[in-house]
Image 1: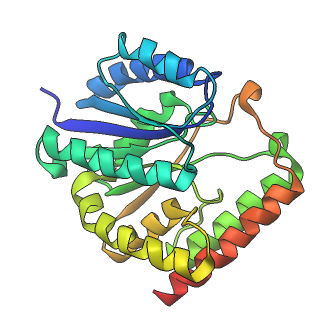
Image 2: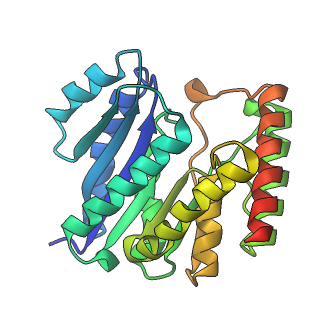
Length: 261
């Protein structure tokens, strides 16, 4: 019997080009998890009001994969809301699955920049007892654009050193694993901080992943970092300067907020 229950939560919006392949590859990764003594308990996809064929593809996949659980929103509410909905559902599922200390909550994206083949590697430090939080670091290279490469490596490293004591050469990594019992202690704090952040800055807490890391660090969780597979060429997205400027704004607000709490 597998000791560990792995519960993935994954926001998706207009992901018809990737969601089917993502789940197929997750099913293959589940076999490798099983060899490590881990069971892919649930793969929760939050369909955030998609207007393409994402919903229909998910319904078709639900007939094939027993681990798939679908949360469907009628209207798009944005990535922050989808991630928080995923956190809530993943924690609820962990409580149903058994002792929280034997469950691992994994957050990843649906666009296949994050590859399901990395699931075993991301949860491995927790299974081995090396850490309670495992952060997957995506290698952002020149294929994403030189500005994006510099931004991720420089800003990610600076944030990581200041708040986590370790260099993380990616901006706000969105592929990570946290032991459920540790998540259950941090989650209420994160929920309380969200409206405070919104009131202070007039926007939602879009870098909730990094804030989660900092709360985990402050609560005593040991942290590991894992290098992820490079993004496959067909899933590369070049970030325009305007988007990077927006990320810079999120970075400034988030770091200011973290220094104040």
